[in-house]
Image (cartoon, rainbow over all chains, first blue to last red; front, top):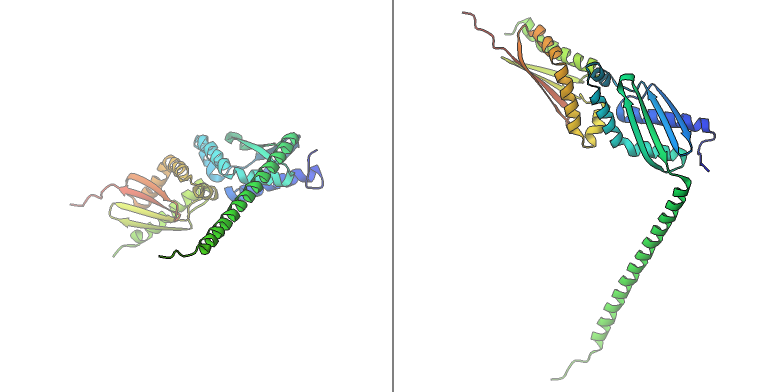
Length: 168
Length: 119
């Protein structure tokens, strides 16, 4: 079952859209005029309209929309963890990957978040639990080794102190 | 002593360059200073980077920001040159542009045709 942290699906979608706009505003300098989000099974889709900045509009006007796509692709590469974190926080589910596409001529972009499937999430939880256990065991083994080394040193020192000085 | 036109030309060039940046980029420099030295004009611009350019630059993608700026400057070459030619009344024979990230500054350099000495 999907864990939804807001009270209703509608509120979640609004929260997702608002968060996407806020991230763009903060890191891109301009948020899209309109965002619509959908959340179906393991997919979150956000469609952004009116997102192009003034300089991007200029590039489209001079026939260099390729620079817009390149800049947006690079931005998403850089800001991907921020988008993923926002969606994970709001949906309560792990985001496996995020895909983006921009159609600069029509000033529309999409963000598609693929969420981890519940059975994978369970497996990951088990794996993470095992990893944590292994880490704890290693730490314990290391502590025992350190303790044993200290005891050995002490024993060696005691042995030396027990040796009687030889008479000439 | 420079006449009124010579005194006001640097200010007019600064304003024109900032305006071109504003129209094209949606953001102009917060400070512009123009120096005119014989056949060379250097316009120094402070705080030119847009928010996304700052984000990309701080993520180590300066090359891409620089490349995109170059595309813009080349596409608008005629606009920059026309502004300087109109203000100075002289022909621009070369226009160069460069950006620096930290500090956030840019320079536009215009080389003018040498003025013919009156005989």
